Image 1 (cartoon, rainbow, N blue to C red):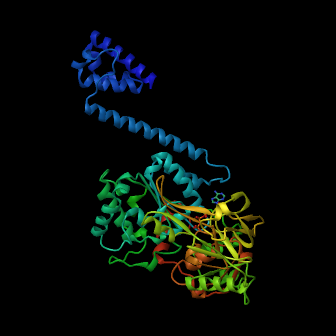
Image 2 (spheres, helix red, strand yellow):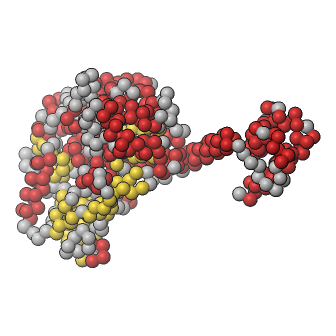
Image 3 (cartoon, rainbow, N blue to C red):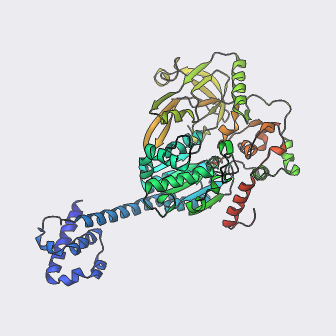
Length: 532
Ligand SMILES: Nc1ncnc2c1ncn2[C@@H]1O[C@H](COP(=O)(O)OP(=O)(O)OP(=O)(O)O)[C@@H](O)[C@H]1O
């Protein structure tokens, strides 16, 4: 600051003497090119704006600026700051942590994001979309400041996993029912400030967003923001992620125009500078399984390929430690309750502690962790947070309750008996599980927080709930699967064929939507890949 003032004074006196010597030199437009520092350029604008005032400026005072000049100066400063932030973001990309050796495609995404581009990231299950998105959010925060980056997802579970909020709550459109104009009015009254403040918007699990909603949100962005009216989303940097071969929008609403998926939205292609499909699968290392899953993803039910699956069908249920996946929620809670009761042990109940205001508080109920978790020794559980990645204690890790430990200070508000569960994880470690927090965030601000034990009963899970998870073993009855993508989502959770048990299977349930197939074919060709 001091050196800046010094420079300003110095420049001022140089300009004054130059002006006295040769005013014409100063007033020629080319004199701008003499400048090298910001102080000089700022001063040049001051002097060219009003030369009559120059002699009146005392040598020890900063020159008075006219308001138009101040605006220009501010704009320039802003641009310089922006450039600085972009450079920092690019540096962050270069300094990506070594524990994730990003692929070239992942690096391409990070580079594009750091350059301020809008990107659609897609790819089959386990190609690293979620882990990449977490990094993308960090880069965006460096690029635009934390407060102007909004992280959302179409489902509460996915939003919580990214410490974000649901897309509907960000947009302020309630349940999203109604025509475009009425949704715009609701959004204006509920979340104008968010739309205006946003410089980047992240949307995860896009497969569950329909075309009408996507177009409506783009319209709302333009109407409320009115910043760069000629540009889609009014200049907002948009990062969208998801796999359209996975679960489609709930209810699969068909609009009057016959559009279902977000990629059918009128604004879809205009919304992105880059659309990229990640092609390297990390979740499974067995090539046969990767190929089988790729086929199922595209709806291929060729009996020859499916032989691998036939070999995994079981007539009796494997041991209780294997997670069961069901297409419907009723089956999930029935099986979990039955199993818990069948152990005949005393149970401990944890009740979630929610703080924050509505509607954010209610959003916590849609998230990963249940309102109440009832556990007992011997219960199969799944971890709902990454607590020690190096030990494999990540979201989705399974284990068994071995006992309970008294911890008055930490357990007091979620468990009346102040007991904390000890879990023997299948991956090896046995640890006492402490309560964790899940936030609904807006930029940097915490809007609501849930405190709960990060466990859920894991004898059974719904296929909708497990989208995004990785499981070592699973047992599923897919004879009751419905809609497109469900068989693929269920099967693609498992790491290896050895961990897969099928208690019911019907090849006709393997379905991919023809529109989705067409979309990916186009994407594939646009990425210059040789075959689909
Ligand atoms: N470049 C990489 N190198 C090594 N492992 C990676 C890389 N990218 C992702 N992974 C790992 O791959 C696994 C799957 O990643 P992730 O859950 O992000 O996939 P996804 O595409 O979001 O899957 P889904 O569509 O099922 O949600 C994770 O264990 C992750 O750590």
